[in-house]
Amino acid sequence: MLKSSLGKWAAVLATSLCLATGVMADEKKPSFKVGWSIYAGWMPWAYAADHGIVDKWADKYGIEIEVVQFNDYIESINQYTMGAFDACVMTNMDALTIPAASGVDTTALILGDYSNGNDGVLLKNGTSMEDIRGQQVNLVELSVSHYLLARALEMNGMSERDIKVMNTSDADAVASFMTPDVTAAAVWNPQLSLIKQQSSDAVQVFDSTQIPGEIIDMMAVNTEVLKASPELGKALVGAWFETLELMSGDSDEARAARTYMAEQAGTDLASYDAQLAETMLFYTAADTHAFTTDSALRETMDKVRLFSFDKGLLGNGAPSPDVIGMEFADGSVLGDAGNVQLRFDPTYVRMAMEGKL
Image (cartoon, rainbow, N blue to C red; front, side):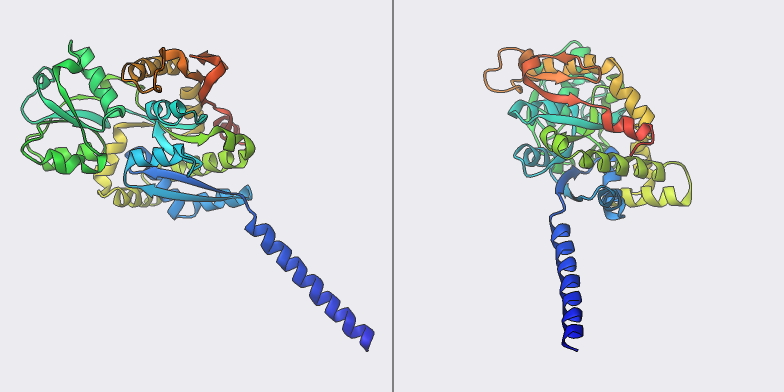
């Protein structure tokens, strides 16, 4: 009897230990934080996070991923740069001038789209870029809006000496344009669409369709984190392309997904679809891979680094645009090969394209 009781207690103890060990193993599951902010091409992350798609792919690779929304775009990148986040959505220029310029080795994991009309210059008192001369232009200083403005001025025979820049948060862009004192702005969607809807005086005199492929939106990941935990790259890429496939087309499911994204962006489906039409969103891994491996990307990043150097964005005392190295899909490097801080790596997208995730 005693022997039988001891056997039962041993079995119970063994079961308890197994359960405890399982819980401990679960608690030690690697966890990562991903930041995003509202923009037409990034709303799929809201849907993927809120509808279990991110969790599904994280579970597949034995990790946890927390997806956090920021109301201030630049703040999200600052948090990533400080190490509070492992990955964050940002543009190609901001990846170069904020984390990379701060010495945070960053990998462009997914080049999700490029702006094809989602960024624009608006005037109240004018109908062409020439009319911007002498005006104050509100924008997020040293962001892609600033880059867009500089390219617009250059293409119309002007420079920043012909205008005055006023730094304005993207969160304040719409409200500020509605005030009498603001007569010009460079903004991105959804602010661009909201201003055009709310201001009868707003005239769009330039947009990103005139500089195709230059303003790129991407998911950036800390390179050291990615090397140590490739599961993060696989999960994010898998979740991304599953969401894009789900939202594509005109099925009830696709419309419901885009409606959710629209609501999260503070708009309706029609407006969101209009914004998507101005975003060259790469819906398939094959399209994303083709864009990432195209030699035109190197030419684009050369323009971006020259602008960034001119604005003093490549670090204090940077002697030339070559101070930061950028590595491309073919292994070539633009800038200092001994100081590569930004990498365009199609490895994980290729895995998705080949059905290996």
